[in-house]
Image 1: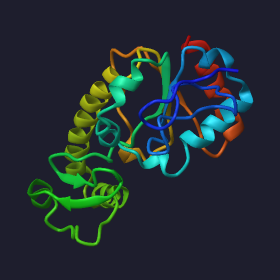
Image 2: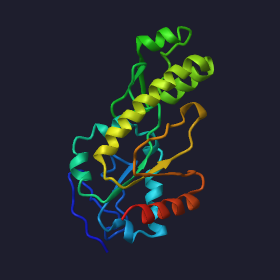
Image 3: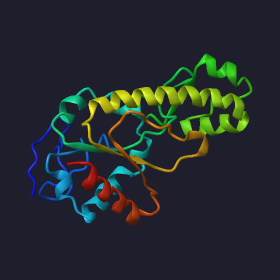
Image 4: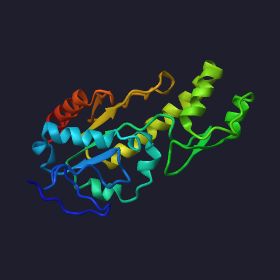
Length: 219
């Protein structure tokens, strides 16, 4: 068994403590798991399934890149880890020049900025509470104008993901989940992380994909 030292997040940096896999900094970061020095070598397919269930839980799938960047202690804790697994944050769950999201619940659409109202004067943003609802409406209202919004989102997402990856260990696994065509995440250049696609509806195959990625890409 692997014994892990507690960290400031109330969890432990490691994958295999006495009672099974440690699967994150804390319950606050469900979509991010830091892996201790011996964690990846001791993981089993059964542990990978439990880890996957945590990483792709509903609350994990709405954590945006802003949510992770708002954690001031992340660099300090991450420097003691050998690797990480991260569910790629949704493209639209971040504040940007067109709209603002909730600082902790990044899937919450707070308000449209003047630039977005000017670009879509026919859209009533008042009843929109979630980013998915708002962006779906924009994409179907006018794909050409929505392309401008998506381009800005992709640029901000890529830049902030670069900052986040700089705070994490060099070796890592990025988990790509299905998303709507108008919310596809862009590629990340210049990263040593492995990017794998997992279908949440096929947990058995997803667990094996994660197991292989953890045991071959993180040492």
